[in-house]
Length: 112
Length: 115
Image (cartoon, rainbow over all chains, first blue to last red):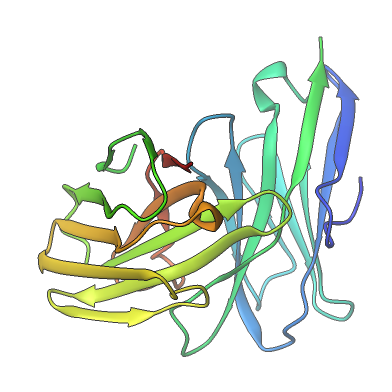
């Protein structure tokens, strides 16, 4: 996987592989995080979320890991499928605010 | 899909003309947001609303105004469009502000081109 920073990195994987997409966040006070998936021509779609009192949360084929020590969030997609091809980005928010901060995204390309 | 409809989906307009984008929701959510998405910048908040007639500015509000006269509708107006406002505009809603159990849900966007 590659970190999301100022660029839009690309991760290319083969169908069936596991994918890991990373997100570095800057606000140590952030206490809620979401991963979104955005397919071409569509709006971002909620995938999975995690609160800061958790280290790991699992969904269907997806797992989010949170490392507060290094302010790092990752999204793991198991058995990646061509339909998983999209831009993935994280969002974070700190308590008391209703305005999330969005990462810039990673483009995931799944080759059949 | 969250019940969010953005209109129009595509628009081409000339510099200096006024443009209004509409976001309509059927979820009766209190919070509505307007974002723009540009390559290299990600999603940037323009304005948001926390109730009928209650709005506030985001980080890139210059050149934009909003109105919310009904819970279900949130309008974004470019009073005099400029080429720098060429972008994809997304509306988002949340039940009680972005928080645990109240994430943002997005519409499918309006692609605006200012020539």
